[in-house]
Amino acid sequence: MVGHLVIEIDQKAHENLKEMVDTIRQSDSPKSHTGTIVQKLITVTEYFNESYFLYPTRAIKVSEKTIKMIEKATQIGLGIQTTLLKRSFARFSEDELHHIANFAEVRMPVAVNGQYYLYIPVSEALLLEGEKLVAQIRSNDSRDEIIKVLTSLSNQSLAAIIDYNFVQVLREMGAKKFFIRLVQWASQIWLTMNGREVRKLASALTPEQLHRYAEIIEERVQRQSRPEFI
Image (cartoon, rainbow, N blue to C red):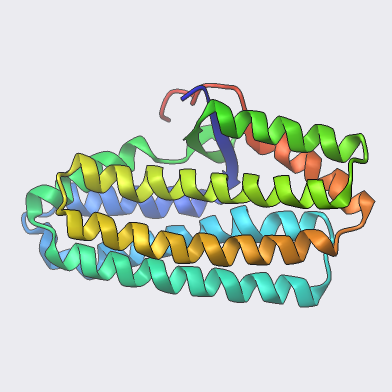
């Protein structure tokens, strides 16, 4: 990994994740708090969806109809995540919950100058794809090519997020292959839906909106290390 997706997020996401970690570590019986733990993660996911999916659409000033469409898609995604979380956490042992707390702490949003950011490790290929897309937009490349690369970058980014926050955690915990396959299956549904919606959105963007989107990509796809945990 040579860089990160850097996503600004509400401080309350940090607070909820920290409360989840504290609930697990401070309880004599963390499994008795499974409902609270899952709800904290769902709340964090809602803040993530707002920052990752909805902020860019508002920043580039798409229509309210488009925003509603994206809100609906994120709700479907949240439903998939909620189902996976409930099924997984119902089967986790107390030792596994403590492992979850450790993984969550490593992935905690980081405070930088009073603002909180998530850092998602990404590959060199994703960094190059982001740089390629920004260059294409600014050189007014063909619309079809821009849409193709934009959709690819969006799906690569979402896949990196899913892998870092779900698949890697399950593998490091030694989860059964069934759970990992279940997450991967659900992820493919999510990625297919994401690609379809991104193509639809990109096709309707004006040149000015695309240029604003290029600025957002530069803000998010960065060749930098994650700051020390704060």
